[in-house]
Image (cartoon, rainbow, N blue to C red; front, side, top):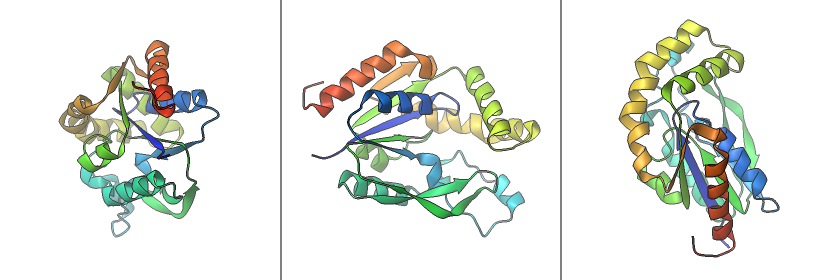
Length: 208
């Protein structure tokens, strides 16, 4: 049987990863593979580190969407892939890749997941995680300082110059393509439970 591909979109810091992991935990014993759209950033190795810092990473053109669509197609055919690994400190693709085995369910998350029609068409279930902008900004600051080692000034400058404008131009409008919307972020237990029930029915071949 063809794997079920679940796409989870939403703004930066919306709680997409929290939703993805809660869904995966609830789908046991089905096997689940995780794909993060951020791994598919283009590899601008021809640029200096300072130039790479200035790239608009929140625009659809920053992603290697051809490779992403190819990999989703391979997973849909129950074939393993070698997923890229992205170094967010160096703003470049790492030398190593990550082996992702075929699975019953593929969960992919990303801010611009529903912007490209080809990627949307790969997703059997499309979920949008909707969270207030101030909460998303706070989460992004904490994550980028702790995990990616970025200074506060750089985080805020990037947010104001690219993250916020690109959210309004691309991310927010893509919400209309979602099958299900989770308001108030990744801790909305009621909404997540409803989504899990819908996915379980799909896995069992029942009408949703």
